[in-house]
Image (cartoon, rainbow, N blue to C red; front, side):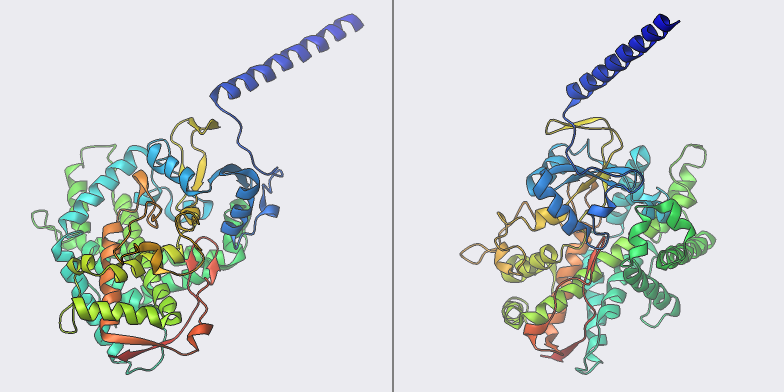
Length: 494
């Protein structure tokens, strides 16, 4: 019996060794194991990360582990890509491999993997293709949408003029104006600035910007099961998104009552037409639920990103009145004071164009990008990344590349100017991401930022309530998005 026991143990050891060797050989043939800090069971790497400034934490880890490494959000493995070369290599050179979407637990809770931003596979391809085509049909990238932006910019300027130079926080004014552009496309009309439903909606978005800064909200992404049952600001944020979702469902219901298939008025009508066309297809990706989520995606993305960029841009420009003077000189020379700015002006305004680009580069709105995923087992720089692994292609490492942008922490329009003053393009300018998951509304956002900003500076000079040298342009929130600190400014008519 003793001999039999020893034989059994020996055989088990041999089998274990063979299995380990086979596993090691399999992995080594696929690629090297990724480096990264040792993670703890359940906790992952939370002790090595600052949830309220993850970007800085990952920057420090990249210095130790290189441009490709792993961390763990709780038990979940994440591959981090840090550096312009490695991010471009993944998103552009291996665009298909990295075209998946893997979302953080909080966003999974909020959007449930539907809509354009969080869906995957054929569903994502169908919804994105339909959205891009339909948005173009309703003017995105065309003269008609430019005219809508010019009209809204006129309303914004007149609204600012009524403040009569008194200092105020322009955040809501900017959000209302920007939101009305995407609302006119997806809902069929703009909202009056005093519309109670519209004001409530904007207040919910503004409140969520503050709530996402809380430590509880950040911890939800590490420990969703635990945080789901605990009270805190994260619960309020979830309820606010549910209210916004309810708002879009109400508008969809109103559209269904007055819908005429032969005459689509907006994005919602066009989507209802598509649902009707595919009603015999039991596997169709076009459903009321998909419409609700896609509409919510477009509304949130079309409102938040651009309005935050403008809001941040205005606080930066208060710190540099000499830059404002140069922009206004160019506006006066190319556009004058009597007509609205248009996109055709941009090519003749290299300094203003450089300022707009530098605002987007400097603020680094989404340092992490929206998380990606590899859609198959992927070999990347001799490393093996298993299918469905979450990936952070760190946009902050591209926008702050010191080789491309000398002294990247400083606001300097010269980053986008040649020695002779002409505009200089950069492959490292990717605030909208790159590759197959590039922001669908990039063209619209660029148009809005240029026309709104030049319209404001055409009509007003900015006067800070503090000495320009003391204006704080560091972000108030370094969690998932960089947001400007609250401020007031006077708009003095020119």
